Image 1 (cartoon, rainbow, N blue to C red):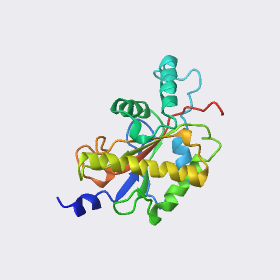
Image 2: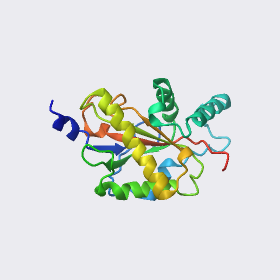
Image 3: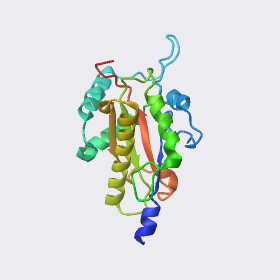
Image 4: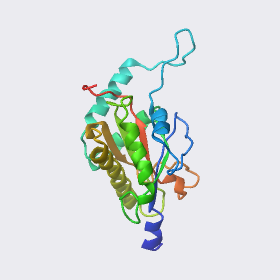
Length: 213
């Protein structure tokens, strides 16, 4: 496979996620609003007493998760071990998420002009007082076109780009944004690893409030 085809297949990325443990509905990048993002990332409210709320979260487990997330603050994306990346994914699986389509320039981690509006709506949503103090994971994913090392590096660089945009343009506290790259290892569609839907960055509200909250 030529380098042109390998790189052109990675020229776009999607900010992806779901509203629950199952895959969520993708929202086109030029149509998403800050309100849509805000609603999707809001922590789930507990059911009223007397209603069946199903299995309850174990306070000890939640405390352990909070301590773990705290160790990730201000860490460099490339400093995360494989075990840490997997633990982040396990915790994030049960948290509120949103799908956004974000395009990047060819063979680059720079956000394209066409997708800047979607990135701006994300910044507005995360600036909302209702989400202030929450910890967000920005996880990069690619499709399976290209080598694994290349895809891993690309996913990390693009996640870092989103973090830098949010901190510089919207004043989001960098300690509240945890970036992680998964390369091609966690496709959204495992039956079609080269499908464009696998190129995404997952934004997840980890529900962990900072001490300043």
